[in-house]
Length: 76
Image 1: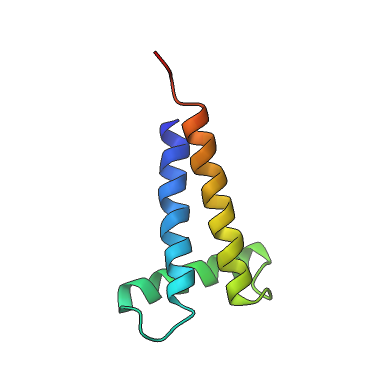
Image 2: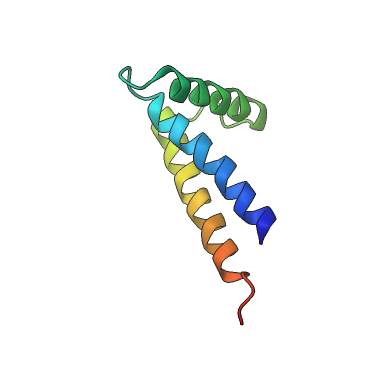
């Protein structure tokens, strides 16, 4: 569960950076996360996708990982 939660945090930061890179009014540190996301997507082969599509796919993937982390959470 902790591994999934950590992955969700990383994916969430990349998603936030991807959406911040769409506009020019975002702070520099958010646009820097967008640059990291763009370079990772180039390595994964999804760099030719439109920016908004990549950000939307990342948002859905992040939601799925958070949901999975909540599902596997130990219950009392």
